[in-house]
Image (cartoon, rainbow, N blue to C red; front, side):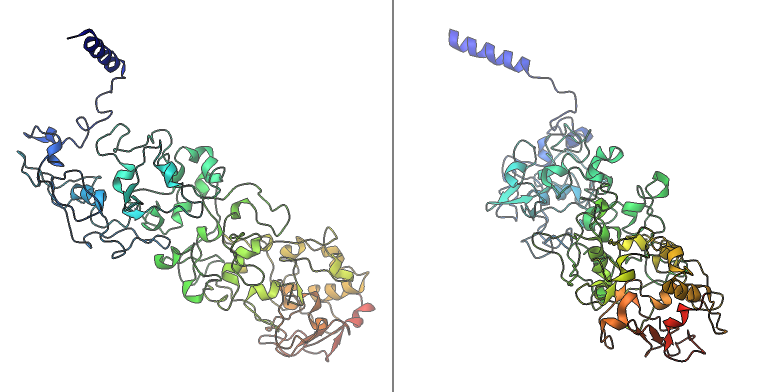
Length: 585
């Protein structure tokens, strides 16, 4: 051997010696579960999957295959693939699903074919695979495979970056990248356990985030919270055998999809309670709660539903109002109502004109736009499951957009825009005088309440001599002292009605909402002028029937009997406000 050859040999031994030694089982096939030769007399390691000659001709003509030594299931409908409202992965869409490397992985991992059933025989007798590694034929609860990798909407990483140093391998078929079993698992290397191509021991979702880059996920509450950050995506999702296939969700106690939120984190146990939130179909006799649909065909379409929701597609779930990938704890309150706060970030909504948010602003900008998903449009009342029925008013609409729309409504609570008029409408009746906007959430608890209409505070709405005289909800903003003052005409008018102290023998007490519409007065038939709709005057027809009217300029009400009682049983119409200019209750 000449000197150069001797030098090269010596260098090669030095380089080999310098390589770090692998611990037993750290990598490779020999010390991994894929070495089936450890189970019997067969000494060849690779023969269970590969053969050097006469390999199986695979049905996927765009995949040459790894000299396969097992039979392949060629029936294109043998497996049931993952299906979702946002993913096209249905039978018949592709030549066969799964395909390519995923189909040959399943020749063991579907649990239907004996491990020793190879094209060229082996000296062992092994039955089908058993245990947690068996996926079966129904793949609807497993991460989708044999799907085209699409780079769109900022939700997925550039495929060029995915196949870089990450270890993830996208399989190209005719130049198009596909996600397969071998994208996440390397059958020849078990260094990280479960043949993962990325180390997930410290950061459980390190593999997920190679491909998945949800909008605004970095810095979101679910990403950065210390008790959640180490598991990341895996707090809510499972890559295999998820309790709910759609969106691969983990559920608790066999419950519905909302247990993905309420079962482990958002409950009283961990101090992040959503209160009385209740999901399920049917009437709700014991409270006032948002109700959900456990029809997964409906519930799973939350990201693609036409808005506002139609009658046949009503559902209320956590993800209808909260985007788990974008939600943030800050700001806790909107800096300028009705702007959304942090927990409502990234949710689709309907604007004040009835149009779904789209284009440059695909998400709701204002809190009420999220409420309008269900509470606006022609089907606003459908799916109403609460025990307390909605109030029917003189100028009636279940479409809340019509009641708050500052472009068409005649008067409205300042949710979508300020309402400014002369005199009292300038906010003199408020605890802190002035004008400001409020949010739906100021009065209603969307997660549930023991009170009718999901109200945050008591606000009785009946009319009788035993009616309460306390209205904590209204008085949380409005100054009770000002409204019931005996020193002003408007104060004496309200005091007489609230306390039931009139000039006549009538002792009935009127609730705030008997006369005032807490949302707004929609521009409906009979509403001919601003005059008869100022001050949110829109009578409850239980006590002031159809045909009753209000005259702001003339200072009077003309009332006819309602469906239950009459406000003015012994007072001639019109009843004049000027009577209270001298009468002091």
